[in-house]
Image 1 (cartoon, rainbow, N blue to C red):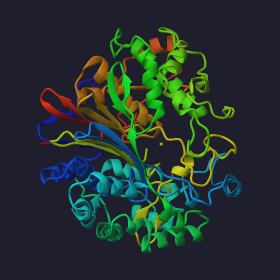
Image 2 (cartoon, rainbow, N blue to C red; image 1 turned 90 degrees about the horizontal axis):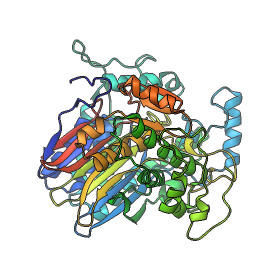
Image 3 (cartoon, one colour; image 1 turned 90 degrees about the vertical axis):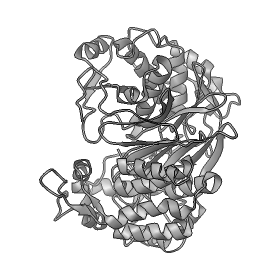
Length: 559
């Protein structure tokens, strides 16, 4: 693989194009499974479902049966986009008081930092939505038999997985924590140490997926009901009850994904959807008001404007956005273009804001509700397009690497830890509560015009998913560069405090950003876990559909 010189966007991955279909994913094996599904007569939804199940095996630290996700689907025959939100919901027993008591006990025992629900253990587990989301997509829009989509993952699980350098590094980052979770430790560690990775001179250790294969066979034969009811649900409840968790079989039985028609948003006339991610919408609305096209995308000026718009969107959403099903939230205000124009006036071309302050989106809310209250790497992604022009974008996640570290005995299922994203304080928009969904910045973007979809982007990397998706989208729409080049271009990220800069950005540009008033922190984007997230995407180009993916980790396939 050729190197990426600092300050350039020299391609490290050769672009791949196809006229019949394309798949981009977080792992090559998943992309191959997705493309094979298209070749066997499946549509883009089928391809993404099959690739997702394959990812549960080949990327066990990033996603899994016990995780959650978001999906955007463009239906060419109806010219509409549908969202399937299958993020976690808090169990019925999840109350702020219950968690405060448990966290106080854990803090006294030295087990977690103050104010945090924590990233490990049974209390970090919410109601998983991954299987329900994939099942919902299949029932509504799939073409092939469900069993044919789960089958390739079972084959991969039966074969086991050779540990590569990236997987070994992921396991190593949580090795000390794993020792407190015997089921997961016995699977991932070797004599208490991370496994050996495959090298040119060593075969490497292998992970055994026998237990997961049994669970996958149940899901293949009985659909989502195999996870949300019956022996698997009972096993989850037993393990939770034995270790102080609050998730029950009843919670699992009552889980339903949220399916909705997505309104098409506009950025400089280009249509797009994000499966309800408001940070992306506000950021692009703000950036639309700034003269981005007048600056080259490698300059300090462009990076400054991009970072300021992103930071304002993050600060506003972290202040005002909550679960609208439970609390008044100014969703329309945050997405309003007039509100974006209002806060964009704060952004100067050559000077960073000394402090990013939230605006007041309630002033722009169509129906003003109540007064507003006072003010992670365990994800993978798949995008696919088929011959008919159906386009799908998916993220599927367990939260942090290997989620909660809770492995349900005899199932091979690791449960996610997305409860960590709730606020333990009461009476906040993101406060923990039964049935609620925490704030989650993760766009699954599809670009579309009046007659067709033109591309899809998704990414992994916690809150940096926003940057991993929005940066290449802006480079495509404002500067017209190729999909692979757009995904590989060095990025900046800003959530309101420090500006994080890719180490490949030239020193002169980073120095200019600092002179503007930014507190610049350098992140090595070439590290194994991806310092700026790992994007993948498919995009309509002159040569056909391009499949593009992060050069450090990811897979592409086109036909």
